[in-house]
Image 1 (cartoon, rainbow, N blue to C red):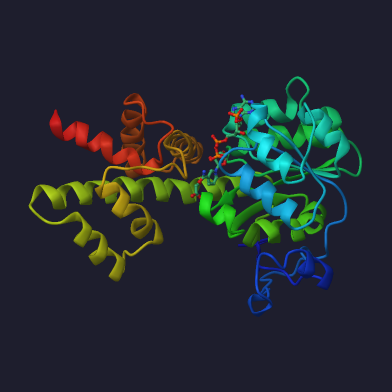
Image 2: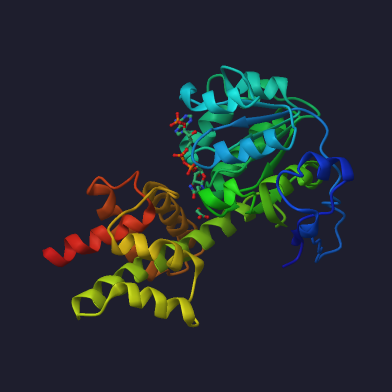
Length: 337
Ligand SMILES: NC(=O)C1=CN([C@@H]2O[C@H](COP(=O)(O)OP(=O)(O)OC[C@H]3O[C@@H](n4cnc5c(N)ncnc54)[C@H](OP(=O)(O)O)[C@@H]3O)[C@@H](O)[C@H]2O)C=CC1
Ligand SMILES: O=CC(=O)O
């Protein structure tokens, strides 16, 4: 794809490696590959204060990794109590997104959905009120392209820079600094925050104009949502015809349709337990946004549309805050009808 840069762990300075030696053994030194000609992402160490808005399932471990790497991190969350652990571990706290952005050089936001990501950026006491020339705003939430562009325009009006950078990878990859960043927007900001992305993630893609990162993320999660719905059908059908679903998980893991997600979630799904890594409500949100994306280019996505209906049923069963693998419960309910 024109304008696409793929980087796997940029080279890091010795001081940064020393700082983050808690994370990886030197034998796991970063591999770097750049597949286009632009000059972004040379891996220069970030200098300055880092803000982080949204200390939820993802935001908490992402901010924690920055703190552990020795950065001066200032946080905010709508529900303040969720900041307590990070404050005890050295984070500073400001009472509004505006104050975080005002006191930091670059501010990340990891917020639930388009409406809340826009509110945190542009609403009352929103981040843009604290932004200005020389500062950067990096939105790592999963939103649609239109929301991302709206936030970008508001940020740019303050003369700050904007990078869209949704992530692929869930709670555990966030804890392990193994996320995949899907970035788009200001190349200079991408380059400036590359070393921060490399602390939180294992690779980063630069995809060009704002909207492309959001679109890539929605396509990936559209596939993931359909895969999980299909896997759920398989587990239930196997059981119904007298097979052991645990054996199905094992068979799948050895063949061409093997996916880490199935091996990770399958055994718990067989036990009907859904410890939350990726909330079901967010997966349904992503399918809804992917349907909008497909509609915008008249692309039929009937399988994703069917999966979306299943996640909606699961939500109506009160499973919004369970892991998205709880979508299997919607099928169980359908089977009983
Ligand atoms: N969990 C996962 O596996 C992954 C999630 N994502 C995406 O990351 C984003 C965050 O997800 P995750 O951390 O899992 O979700 P959580 O539900 O744990 O966190 C959501 C965050 O958004 C905040 N928030 C929600 N509504 C508002 C609002 N109206 N105003 C201000 N803040 C608000 C929450 O604050 P409060 O604590 O006060 O509710 C919380 O900090 C989502 O876009 C999700 O799709 C992307 C990749 C993986
Ligand atoms: O958005 C969820 C993920 O696992 O990626």
